[in-house]
Length: 140
Image (tube, rainbow, N blue to C red; front, side, top):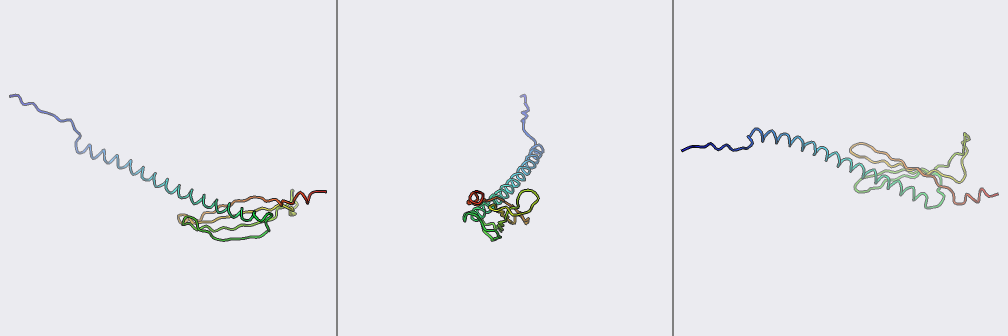
């Protein structure tokens, strides 16, 4: 009787271990990339909320028409994050080097500060508001 040796074609244990090691290294890299994308998404969300806070404060200062000069500040909580804001309304200097105030024009600037991952972040938004009665002042 002729005994034929059947040779199975399969991977050895060492080859399987090496393949698993390579796959685990690649998966660790993907996990790190995923964690980085989560941190970036959290930072983007916090910055977006800070922009919303600044827009709301500027809108509130402008709702009364021509805003009065001065400073207001406060704290607001959004999505579990604490935001500190400060709104300053200043008169605008005239054109050129004469630092005379420009009648009928105000600068409204809001600075929002928050803490993210033990770092303090700051964002400032500025707009200009004209007195709606400015055309009455300039008429001859």
